[in-house]
Image 1 (cartoon, one colour):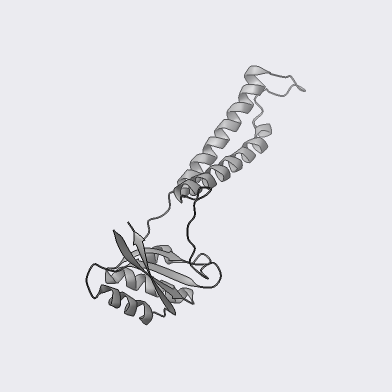
Image 2 (cartoon, rainbow, N blue to C red):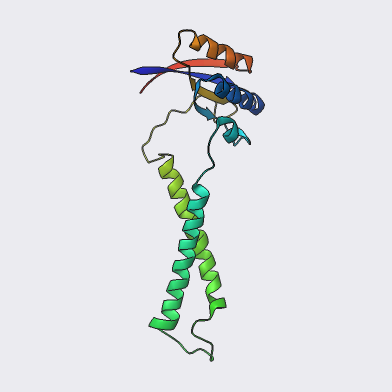
Length: 173
């Protein structure tokens, strides 16, 4: 079974923000909004929940710091203690640079990996890009309500909010 998806193209971020709010208020199903750059306030206009990626980043950084401190403590105190100039074996200030670097490394790599998995951006995944959305256009993809006049109503709604072009695609569900 295929469902119609109406795509409206806009020229400015103000238009796409207004149209996104109007689409949500009208009861149509908002599929996605495509922009060439991050638009402030778009996640709120779309009704998205705050991202959990910040918690993933914090957990990954804590893991990196814990592993770095554990490895340094084990190697300098337990496994291979060296008496260097009478300094204590567990000299914490010497552990700070390595701990910082591993905290940043783990946080960055695990966060990027989590994002790619969550967004399903695997090698070979062929998502169709909409024309000009990566250059200078904004687009809203919506599924009209399941009533006979809903498609025309959705088209009028998008045009009222400044859509310069409309495209109707059939998407199999």
